Image (cartoon, rainbow, N blue to C red; front, top):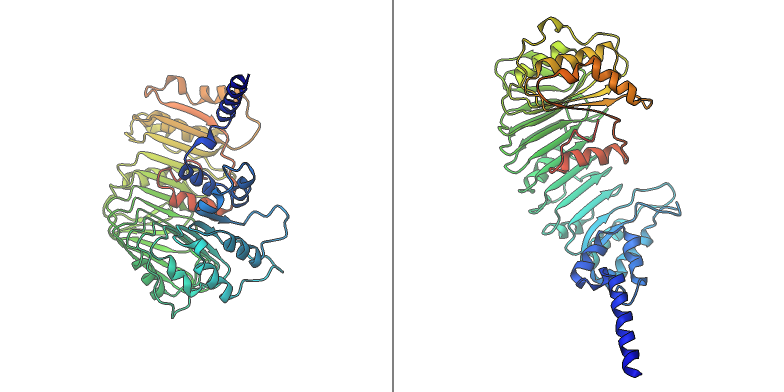
Length: 440
């Protein structure tokens, strides 16, 4: 009888193990899972079972307290309590945004946080609304991702040196030109750089053997960035412009393949003696052969300008066009040239497509002349789109008669969440994804 009981017990244990396969994983794997969870969820895993109880304290700390279900804001004492309860090391620390009435942490408190064992070996840092404490230098040997927002870098600060930093975002930051150049010089393996509405410097000169992606938006007032010079960036692949009054000069970026968005009149973009003002070519002395992807967003854009830009970028393969929602003109002035032009585009995305006469003429032009076209995507402006409407558009565009065998998709635009800062950061820093596919 006892043997039967033990057999039943073994069966129950086996059933429990089958029902909870995750708990059978090694501690190292479970620790990685816990460190990737939101902070509160990671801490709650301690109550799952005795198997999980020690994991939160042994897993690298992921401290992100931006989401506060109670809506009361995060107090400095809350952060201090979490840091004192965790022995470290740290993986990620996100400084919660300051809310009125919550109080700023003192410099002594901030300095204590970064000296805490819980933030030892920190890899990712998002720092907002405070002064940088001296102990931030302690992160120099491990930090890989950094965001600084709404802070000022003191001019007498010892230059930061981050030999492992690959991603850097500076948003609404006050930093002198010399300090910024020193900061970038201290990041020898930096791959992506996002600059949003920063002040105290008017000119930035980029010399980097590692940068692959740059995104920039100039400030709206005051002493803001006026000139960005890409002097020597042999690995630069994407240059993304998000607005503002800034002149961009590209002296040497032989691998630059992705460019956009070109807005109405901005930026002033120069490749040698070839100059653009938004989508308008001011002067063209030589073509830019490296660019293969171009995004346009110009209220005054017309087909003439698009074709001129394509002559300037002769190896262009993908074109993203955002049509203004209010536009009374007819885009197409080249209907008589249908079937006579040789356009090498392989992918075209038309945003804010409404299917009116002007938009149909624009699309039919490319259907007729893009001989190597592989796909054409219409992002529809409007929610009330039926199958019948799409079928009518296909007939009007003569899609079924096209000889290229291209794929044509009518889709609703992506619904984006998060702030513009987060969206721009994903476009610039996620080098595995296409920067214009998900974002308008």
